[in-house]
Length: 158
Image (cartoon, rainbow, N blue to C red; front, top):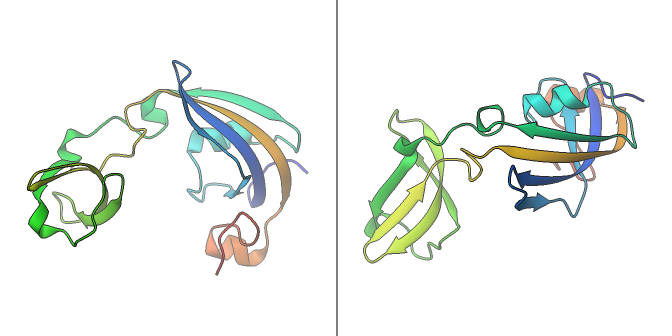
């Protein structure tokens, strides 16, 4: 079966910077619902369209095509007193952005009474190379399509 809209795609992958630094190397396969459900980057879906199990794809993306440019307005310094105990560097929490919308922030450092947060995706601003290996392709179930994600092994559990 070929990858097309409403197929469940199982992949292994490796993500590196354009300079070759490894950012992620999947230990377990990932499964996503193909066809514009925002389960992976649009350029990845475009590159995988029509591929089948056993196919390999190498895809170089500019930052804007991947996780976007860094937005320095998403970098914040907040008083440590505003955070619950146990906050750690590398952890994440949700809070409002400048527009009052929910935003996930990563704790970058804790310096004395200040907590430094970054609301950018960790890979924002980076040109990336994706090495993708298609492990399996199957038709998605009606429930997966209705829920807009894959269920079961390596997918979402309800």
